[in-house]
Length: 156
Length: 254
Image (cartoon, rainbow over all chains, first blue to last red; front, side):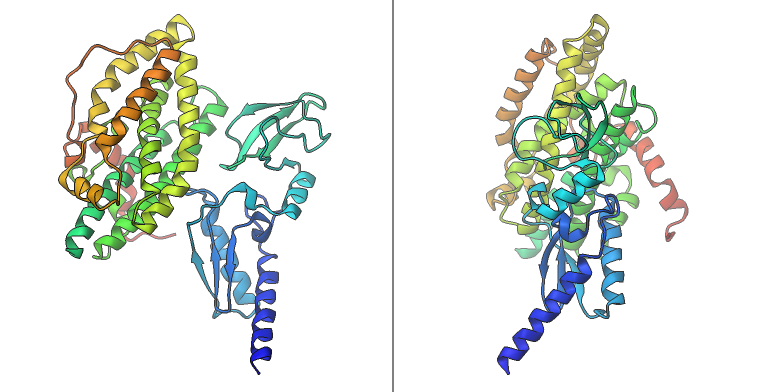
């Protein structure tokens, strides 16, 4: 009996994770909130999310979208809480997330010093144009080989 | 004792939250007016970080106070004499040079402050600070970079930076004023001592200004009072603009 209860729990958590994997980041819709690494905890009755930046306007939208997705899947009783610590960092973006970012034309964050890699031609002969880009999490770069400007997800 | 602790914590949270909120509102005035598109976006991004920090701090202040106020009511329903921000953040933007110099002074103060707060015995405050540090480090790099570039730039940019320095210098001491409530929280390891942060601040400022080729201004009479609610008229004008909608339509929602 105990075994089956814990199996039920594991199944429910897997179902919850599948629902969350379908919630896109509103500013980079190619990433789900799971790819982004902001799902902190999934339990029987609660999903914990963490914001990327203190002032990120997407945080509210993400919370709403998650609520809707959970309700739609029949998980009205699962609550959402926001946790701050430990603070989110770009190292929490999944490997799948990195791949999706590149395909989308955004250079993923790198935790080594040096230039960002051009998402189009993979050149590292690149240059930062502005530390501040279209959203708080991105910087504007330009490739010295293919000459294309591109967004770079800032290491944070 | 617990009630007294809460009053002290509320007072500290208001000081921290108001600094971030008022500076954020000032930076917003640059939206659409900055010298270049990139600078425009960068100043708005800095403002966004600060309003995010202010929201977390003022919401928490409301919780601690426990009378039903939240971040929005604290931001929109208080008068100028109830604000506890330091005076430098309410100073008008001036030109871009004056804005980045003000931001440099604020971030040189705020970065070590939040590094101290991240070690707070108050877990929620520590969590807010942990997030803010990552943002403030960026603010510091950005503003110190521009102070150096403009101070060590053309004759025109140097002259303007010296003028900005001369004006803002008188508001430095005010940032570090520590009232009795703050000192009590220092003893309880909730917040770092402001006096204790001064040495690091002075060293940072000296380093960046010397790299910018800017001499320290002559001694000026420091102006203080922000932490006690004695503000310049600039704050009233800023609040008039920030609060107008909420005051005209108190329960508006959309």
